[in-house]
Structures are given as structure tokens and as C-alpha cells.
Length: 322
Image (cartoon, rainbow, N blue to C red):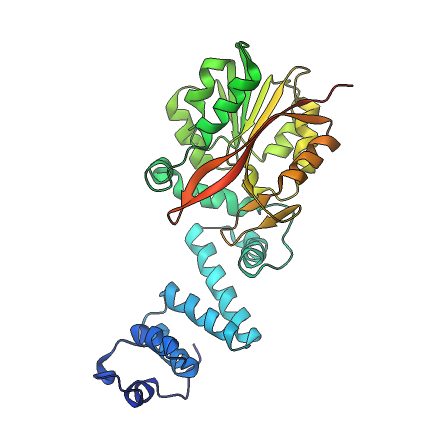
């Protein structure tokens, strides 16, 4: 970490801050930023990172400060360091790190995103969080997407039951107990083996498969009556490839039910959360191209993030009439 020539303690003292020489540099940086002393704040942040190299909050603050100062090259270098640390924390394989870092940087900076999340990122993320995933979703995020989706599915299904059901991106199987009463056969697919282990413990799936869902659909010969994707399309930007495979495999009277996070911008966008949001018009367009049409569309709160509702669309599609 390159030192700064600015004496941040002297600047604190000059601004009338008592006990400037005893203040921790991390705290001093926040004070100095609030006083519009960016160079002194930078010096304090660099000292904080010299003392505590693993302080990600200080690193994030320094990156933001360099962006404000228009020092893009330094900002980019430090941002890459931050993303490399994140890859290490997630245990992303070495060969996939450049791809994952590019994806995360697109999410953070708003640069043109890839058409979908990096598989290595998704599998590493959910392998890591599998042991605490359910508690986090239900306890902290008030996650209600499976219930919202089931309500829409029941509306579209009417009295039909004894279905062949495929749960795309099934995760720990949170939707499994809700789908089981509809199914004569219930199968799930997920990239994360850690999540599949948790889904297996529920004892409601007849079969579970590890793999990327678009590729698994392309290789499958099954014709499910109901295909669901709960909180899965947030890792897909472009929906056309997946919708095409769903339409190819879906039974003639079948339904495809899913959730997306709402975007007010055309098409899709990659959010700072590293999750995609989709405009409903784009979803309809992709459905039309695939030969599918909406039978249920609802806007609802899917979960909460930082105390704020995350609004999304709950959609059920069927084959369009010839």
C-alpha cells in the first residue's frame, strides 16, 4: 500500500479536533472525509490498511475516495485487489478468477455486463453459504419468493395435480415442500453441490442433479409438466437461451413459473448486488421469441435487502397457441 505524504494528524489538529494524535486512522478518515479533506482522509486510510491489510471497509472507502478524486488507475488497481480477496474468500478456482473478477467489476462499476453470471461465482458463493442459507433468507431477508410463486402456479394450474415437476436452481430445496403436493415426480438441478446436499436432506425430491440449468435442459429428454425457477433468473441477464430450452422441453400443456427482480430500465441490468434485474417488457419479449405466452403476471415483494423491499415479478408462462 503506497504511503501518502499528507500528515492527516496535523490536518485533524489544524481543524480543531482534540486528541488528534490518539485517534485511530480508520475513524479519522471518516471524520476527514466529512470535513472535505480528501487527501488527509486518503492518508489516514492508507495508514489503516498498513496496520490492518484485511480491513475491507477501509479498502472500499479508499476506492470510493480515489474515484471521487478522479484517480481511475489507482482506483481500478485497488478494486481488483478487493475482488481478488473476495474470490479467495469464496474459494473460486484459480482458473476462473479473471472471469469472476470481470463480472464483479461490472456489477460494481456499471460497465457493460456479461449475459449471465459466471458459473464459478455462483457455485462458489452458494457452496460457501449453504450451511446458513435458509436461516439467512428466512430470518434476515424475509424471503417469500417460493410462496409467491406457488400462489401464481396454483392460479394457473387449477385442479391439475400429479405433475412431473422440475425445480431449476433448486438450491437447498426451499420450494420443494411446496411443490411436492403437486408432483408425481419432483426433480431439482443446481450448480452448487453444497446446496444440493442440503436439498437432499429434505427428502422431498425424487432426483437431484448437479449442473448448469441451460445445459442440463439442452441435454434432457424429459418433458416436465411444470418447470419452476425461484430467485434463479437474477443470475441470468439475457433470458433468450434459457427460455428457448425451457420451451423445447416443456410438455404441451406445461407451465414455466419464475421470479425476476424488477428493473425500470429497458432490457436487463446488472445491479451492485451482482444480481440481474429485468424489465417486464423484456421478459415478455423473450417469452414471445421462445413461443411462450404469459398466463399469470404479478408484481410483489420477494424479500428485503438492507430493510428495503425488493420488488419483483412473478410470472407463469405456457406455450402460445399455434
